[in-house]
Length: 491
Ligand SMILES: [Cu+2]
Image 1 (spheres, rainbow, N blue to C red):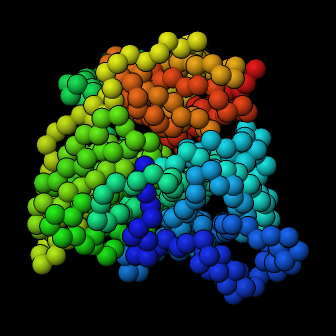
Image 2: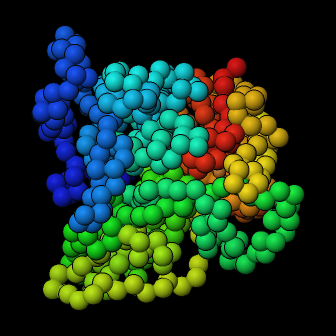
């Protein structure tokens, strides 16, 4: 499994003991009205929590003098990289130093509904100015993440528009594989604003087989009314620094660098490249793929993760970043610098390629499911200046019947995307397995989030093995907040 054991210090990771020390020191320094009664109460608690997460205001300095004020975790954004041991129960205390209720979601973990961090599933929120403890057993091992699950609605200072996210590694005891260095790269946009224009998205014009698709026919379908507002961003980064303002990733020729990439965006899918190098994809959403394979460009939808090995065999100084020129120049990149090399970091336009999950899968057919649910996704255009709404089989959350499952059965979900947007579908508290991607059968790729490209179908299977309410939703904040959500419930 992917390990996160090494390369800690530089990347802002703290081990548990340091983490608690930092938290309490910061709390004492703050000494605010909110904190003092909290500390008194905490001292009465029999045992300290294993982890403490303070949700509160942060200032992210993307570059000297370029400061973004948002909400983050423990004084930073991204929050600290949390490391948890698979199967070992832990307690997390969430301290909410904001004026609104908050929820921390443990994305990709098989935990009970009442701690998962979604109010729709029954997790109690952490009240404004209050604190709450959550106890659960981290599983499965792999690259997970934690983030707010507050709905944002029209408020661009709420939910994932804020900086409330961080990596979470669930460590297994298995051999982590051989690598010389490990880096954590979270892709981020900052300072969102409403716009009538959609972000140019190369992938939306490419089918998985690489053929270009005319968008006109899809637009015609929804041409009754103009599309509503989309989100644009002022600034971009990888982790908390804009391109050119972080310490470079320093490598030596021959190094094998294990990269953990997370798209922590509220809304944008990304294509990522490192010129002249390839990414050997080992895991998607932290789960080892059956057929590791090398690609020149990674495509990562919001909430997706990729664990990949990059062999450093092209000495130079390079830019690892988004293939979108404007956003890369706006900050979404990081410099990779070989020992003994200097000069201006180089970007080279990568060859055109289509991202296709199935290259990482097995060819054999998946076992037959006990039941199949077909889910049609459509957009109801909001009109110029309005908000689009989203429907699943004609209905928007919360006016949508739950998907009823029986414990132990295997279910197939057909995600039928009849809209002109890509949707990263996320199922809480379970993994699903891809079985068909845009007509192509596959098997063995386990994910918790998967992108369904515009006007295509994606089929996934999951076993109902974690009783309790589970959200199924698009991870695009503007879509989930406007209807694109349903509950899976156990009969
Ligand atoms: Cu969506």
